[in-house]
Length: 316
Ligand SMILES: NC(=O)c1ccc[n+]([C@@H]2O[C@H](COP(=O)([O-])OP(=O)(O)OC[C@H]3O[C@@H](n4cnc5c(N)ncnc54)[C@H](O)[C@@H]3O)[C@@H](O)[C@H]2O)c1
Image 1 (cartoon, rainbow, N blue to C red):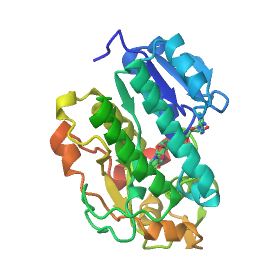
Image 2 (cartoon, protein in one colour; image 1 turned 30 degrees about the vertical axis):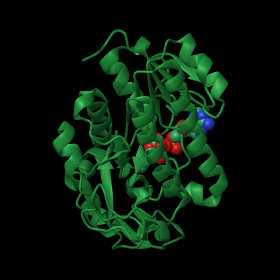
Image 3 (cartoon, rainbow, N blue to C red; image 1 turned 135 degrees about the vertical axis):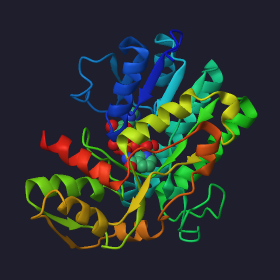
């Protein structure tokens, strides 16, 4: 239910998740309630839908002033360097992913903000984690700088909840598939590129091997999960680091076969690059029973429905 006293700031609003999350939050709470912000220029899909401010979240003072000026009560922090981009510049990825979170948590503490959302990722799991039905609590030894920063971030979120009673919530997103905004440099980006190439040229060269299974989710499910988690009664949230969350798992070979049902001339070949190593360290599918039990998580899209919907929307 919309709460008229809330004022929500989305940081990183022009990214793959930010655009759709901002639009949905504005639908629920009203356009004036949700302030979009990013380093980049305003995304075309956000134009005319509500307030937009330019913000570098690495600058704590500017962020703090913005929180005061707009009477912000909730922050969704989506700015980050993703897995594949992170491996190109590990110290920068660590710096941005950690400092942005600490800036938000510190201002949340100083200004007593009502709620913070910060997403983690399946990248927290590493080669020694179980690959099938990966549990919420298990061996967590990430081997990418992105995964290391996400795991450290989870610990900070739990720390600020325990020590300062900040209402921080998070999800370990799997690879997210969407058509509205471009992906931001992750290892699962192939699952978006493949749709664009299938429709434009009927051919796709995958940077992951044919049988590489990874956990995936369609964006409408991811946005709904995020908002359901944030709207859940605080007493139901038993995990303050970040929840495992799942929907489907497939390989490049499987998604290609699914696309071929709609685009019969489509063909795929495989040319694995350095992203294969990242994918090999991640789970195949995720045990999300805590999310199901605590706040009623239930995915709606599997591979068939997602493929149909992606192709229909990209053809428009
Ligand atoms: N997309 C996925 O598949 C996926 C999967 C798991 C986790 N996540 C997490 O979800 C969050 C959002 O991911 P996304 O896919 O939307 O990423 P993205 O790269 O598409 O978007 C991130 C946005 O943050 C902005 N940004 C970067 N540095 C900034 C700064 N200093 N100040 C302000 N804005 C800045 C970028 O301009 C960009 O618009 C990230 O934390 C990411 O790690 C995403």
